[in-house]
Image (cartoon, one colour):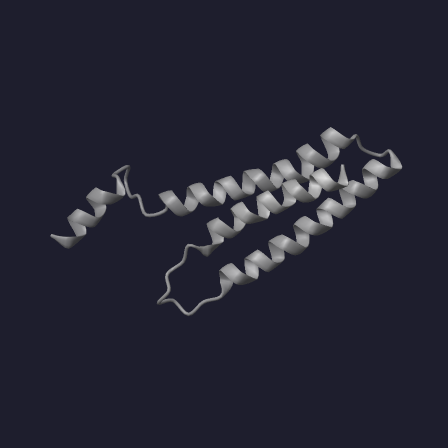
Length: 104
């Protein structure tokens, strides 16, 4: 279970990294880097905590470890990717129309 958890953790952290890497290079802010570090520390501690719960019998392997820690991180990463893609859409208009309307 530990090895599978680390594999899923690496995939989830990769998705979080993709979502956090999209930023404006002209903006001198490192909040994405700080959030990535915080996400890694919290997620790695959650992996260790669920591994200890599974080893002591407090939680089942599939329910506690996979669905709890990894499922939550996957949902967070997918939401972050969705939010990065759709945050520039205003009033239901696609991004291309917004850019065309702004340039004219």
